[in-house]
Length: 280
Image 1 (cartoon, rainbow, N blue to C red):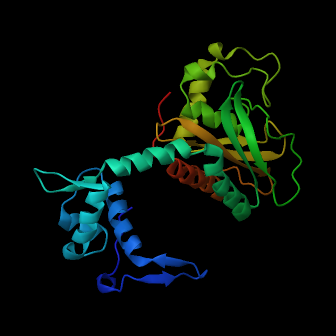
Image 2 (image 1 turned 180 degrees about the vertical axis):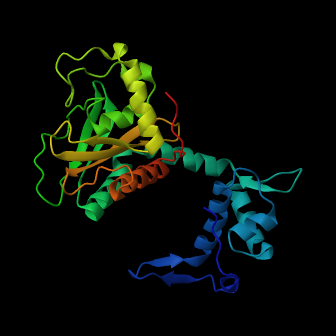
Image 3 (image 1 turned 180 degrees about the horizontal axis):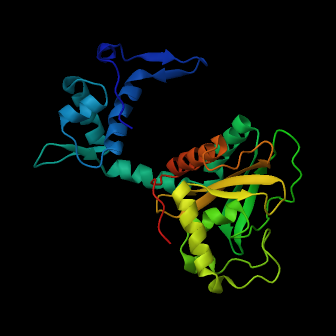
């Protein structure tokens, strides 16, 4: 997230301004914020010259901001090298934000945007006591008759939602899922005896970045799912797009598959997570 701006703006007046909605903002706060974002995006300490360049500022313009941020504890300057890094106050703010995060609230705007953009139904699911559990369902633009509601527990193997959790969780945790969930065949063997099947599902989903269900467990309905991860690398929530097969292309390269991957990444970023998935 390297942020650069035209140097012509470097000498702009740092008063207040109004955006298109009429809301006023303080330009100097936004300028200083670019320095903090540049530090947050860096994996190592930065020199004044490099930090200023990443924020689109000259070193002489950036330095007063860094002095103020250092006094507040948001930035600290290494004594030996003179390079800059985020300070303890920035860490405290970050930890407070993480504690206040609710995965469902973080995912809701992304899910709503996905539903509005694609017209598909969109579901959010978390890992509950009995396995993948739907916590929110946004209706499709066109009628879609599905036996799905908040509280529904999904099969690990028979649904895209369950398959996304299979790709994201260790096999040992999957064994606690209910064997009688939506999409599971009656009389199916215990999960402990189906490790090879679960591993094959995980490998397929990881290879494509999404999980898929084509015409099952609901005939004529296709779905794609992907997990979003929190700051500890745990799969916090799974987002699923589903619709009638005439409206949702089930190919791995489809626009819906790509949109679901991107939505999961957006939620992951909102949760402070990384991009990688842990191995099973």
